[in-house]
Image 1: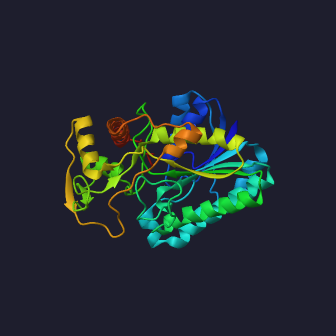
Image 2: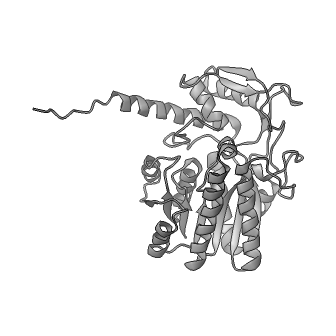
Image 3: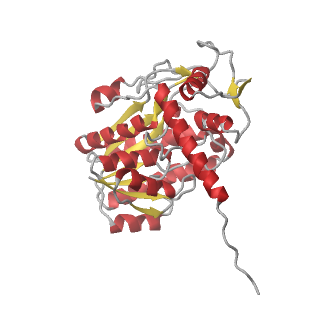
Length: 349
């Protein structure tokens, strides 16, 4: 199949592209590189040994995006482009609704115009009601507590209504829980351009001395050790779920949602301990107060994805931590080399 991947140079997008190429599919990446790096595409090609075409395009730029659709033909779209910080969405909801919601509408308009009837959408576990009973099933109440999550939920509703109106259209909504880790080669992983929003990248920055000790937000929850419990999934397992969803979408019309998580809850302190043990390194951290809006426990029921998609996460928490740190060491080495490069200056007379 020939697949358009929006946001394909990002953390999750790059992993999805690697899996697509390893499965023998062709792909084209569009990315505006606002929170990613074009070097990721070079690494995708290096890992897979295959060429990748891409364009620096923002999906809200309809004219630029149409050039891609007019030039290439696609069987399906895997849509990962969009803003993803809960905190930033609270500070700037207008930008989040414009980029995430309006960008998706423009993308789908072009899909319809150019005869593409299948899309895999990267949704989020944040669409669920904060008080959902765990493990969370896809039929749980949907009620997000952040503008970011509400944009995801609005897009989900859009796809459901679109599929009702157009019976030949297929939309698969993948609700991510907490992707961590890196590619097992150690060559590519999460590389936030700003202050990390996610737990593990910040933890690794604290270990490497780039940032202050990690702050654990609360140790007085009603959990095994008082810290919050979350569902962490290896990003490679998550990427493989997109391939299963792609095959499903080509055979089934309509709109369907699936959880992608490990199906297991790990506490924040368990993650810290596992990371320290797996990599034989100390993790500096402090215990802070709870953050407003945080919940005690959240983890997925993945039965539906297992039974319908035939998907199964394979990597455990230790492997997630080892792969993440291997990538971080590689990244630190690259940064040291770049810092040592002395560029010649032009002499003036």
